[in-house]
Amino acid sequence: MTKVKYYYDPDTLSYRKIEPKKSKKIRNILLFGAGSLLSGLLGLLLLLNVNVLNTPKELSLQREVKNYELQFEILNRKMEQMDEVLANIEERDNNIYRIYFEANPIPEEQRRAGFGGINRYKSLEGFNNSEMIIGATRRMEIIQKQMVIQSKSLDEITKLAAEKEKLLASIPAIQPVNNEELTRMASGFGWRSDPFTKARKMHWGMDFTAPRGTPIYASGDGKITRADNRASGYGKHIRLEHGYGYMTIYAHLSRYNVKVGQQVKRGDLIGFVGSTGRSEAPHLHYEVWKDGDRINPINFYYGSLSAEEFENMLKYANQENQSLD
Image (cartoon, rainbow, N blue to C red; front, side, top):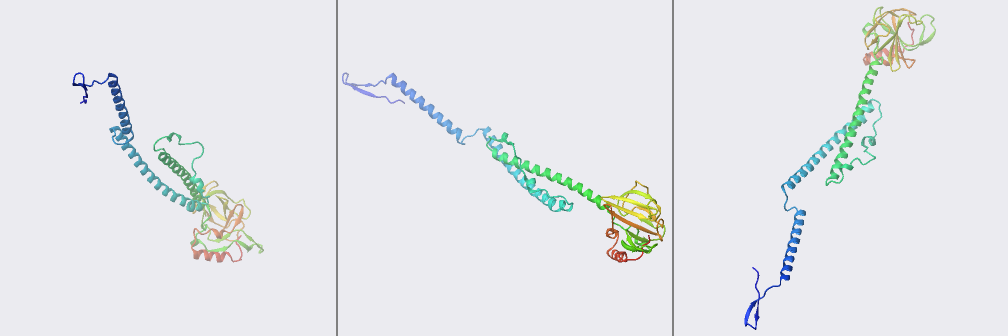
C-alpha cells in the first residue's frame, strides 16, 4: 500500500494531502520497470550459466555424454589389450618365425609408424571432447596399420614355410637302397682303385652292393629327367632333378620303374639294381650333385639311418678300397 503524506495548511488551519506530481509518477514507473528488466536479465544469465535448473532435454544430453565417455574408456582398455597381444605376436614373428625361415625382422619404426602429411582429424576438431576423440581415432588407426603389417608378415611366413617344406622334401635325404637288402657298402666317395685298370682315380659316388633286382628308391622329391643307357660307363641309369640345385644319379640298373618327365616322391620305387655299363658286379652307383658339382652322398642320409648305422657306413665309406665301376 502506498504511503500517504500530509502537510499543515495555516490558512485553513488543517492538514492537507500531498498530491505527487505526474512527472514524478512516470519517472518512478520507468525506474521500476528498468530495475525489473535488469533483474530479470541477470537472473536469466545466472540460470543459463549455473547448472541449478536443467531441462529434461539437457539432462538427457548430459547422460548421453557420460555414456560416450564411459564407452571411450572401455574402448581405450580394449585397445590396450590389443596392443599387448600385438606386441607378443610381433616379438614371436621377429625373434622366432622370421629367424627360422631366414627372413629379415620388420624394423620397430616401421611397425610403430604413424600417419604423416595432411591433418587427418580436422573434421573432429572444435568439439568439447575433440582431444579424446582424436586420440582414440589416431590410436585405433595405428593398431589397424600394425595389424595389416603383421598380417602381411604372416602371409610371407606361410609362403616361406611352404617353400621350406618343399625344400626339405626335395633334398636327397635317405639311402636309395634299404639296409636289410644290402650285401655291403662296397665303396665310398673319394680316391679309389679302378677295378679294371687298377689305377688310383676319383670315385664320384657311393657303391651299394646288392643282389640283382633289389629295389632302388628316390632319395628325395623331384622329376625324372633321364632314364636311359646313353651316358658313358653308367649303363642303364636314372637322373632325378630335385630343384634347389640338387640332382641325383642312380647307375648300373637292370630295369626302370619310372619314365622321363614323371614326378616322384621321396621313397618311391624308381628302379632295380643291376650290373649294366662299366660295372664289375651287381650294385648301385649313387651320386649327389649340387649346383653342378658332385658332392659326398654320405652327408645326406640323416633321413633313414640311425646313429649306429650311420657310424658303420661312415667307417666303410672312408676305406680306400677298390670301387665296383
